[in-house]
Length: 161
Image (tube, rainbow, N blue to C red; front, side, top):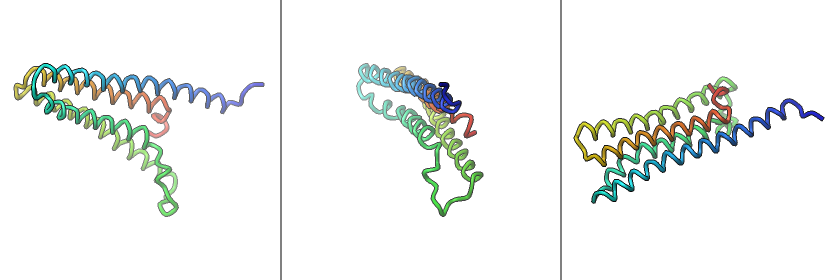
């Protein structure tokens, strides 16, 4: 007996969502691993290296917040109550606003990492600090990419925008 069409779509959706979750998780973990490796080797080479590590970790933390915002906050139906019931158009506006705000946070994380790299290059910082800032740029981009892979893999990429 053949399956109904909506069940086949559901099965394909869950397969795609599972694959995108694994791929996004691997990319996310790789982003943090690259940064932690550069931070650990930089701290081993020089004394007092904790300050640049703390500063350059800020864009990665912000990029991680972007991952949570984009993937956990797109469905705003749970935030709606009876007194704020404005209809479908209002809900769509809220979802688009949340996606826009999430994107602004994500691109802000990348811009912050690039700004730290440019600042270290401009001020003539040590090579280890500049390497760590460059690694923060790479890691922020990987974390951003992981969020997009996971989000688009779940199918929200076309239905929300």
